[in-house]
Image 1 (cartoon, rainbow, N blue to C red):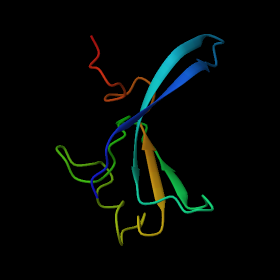
Image 2 (tube, rainbow, N blue to C red):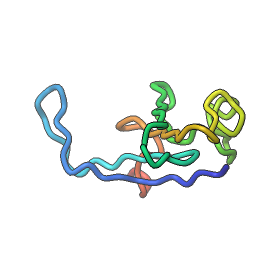
Image 3 (cartoon, helix red, strand yellow):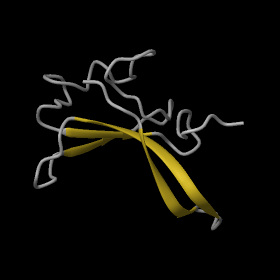
Length: 98
């Protein structure tokens, strides 16, 4: 299981303050396979790290490494797990911040 970090760009995101952010890029990783009926998806996020890399090895290893994967609590043989970064979180963009 070695996920690849993917990105989606939201064309506009209105904040609680009423201000709008344009072209917000969000990083995410997926684990497992989405079922044809699309009823096996679990969204995982973490307020402290804000990182999309939850499992699948790497350096550093994912922060939910012991929970996500075949035969684990979030069994990727059964579930399609999606983990996105939080807005402003590290590794949330294609290019490094300046």
